[in-house]
Length: 170
Image 1 (tube, rainbow, N blue to C red):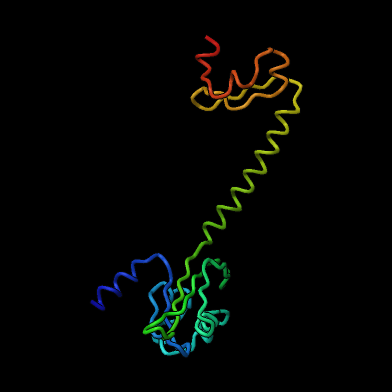
Image 2: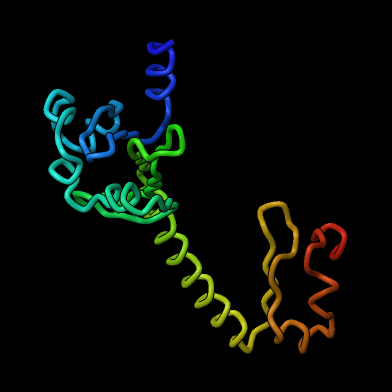
């Protein structure tokens, strides 16, 4: 059963770390070894803050409080960290820390913000144009119309948006 549980934890796409009530690391998975940048043999048996100096896992053990979804940067990588005390017979016997690399998510967020900014600029250009502009997607469905188009043609945007050009102009 122990081997089954170890293999199960190894398949998790997160780093998993367990310490006893004194903060001594007693278990870590391969992802944790990669994050620490040292062999498992140098991690197991050490105090948590010696391996992860900014860890607040001991705070969880001392207070009995859970920490969920906190962002932490380690070695230039952004992680979401969940920490919790581990209880046995209503007594805290250790702490569990699970942290997941969200660097790609953070990069996607930055890219999305950039694209949204460009989209706002494009909207400003389109809507400030004196020329009538009607924009359709690759299938010919109306996705954007400026006020000048309505002024020139008398056709309201709601009559065009979401409709296919074949319906409108044949």
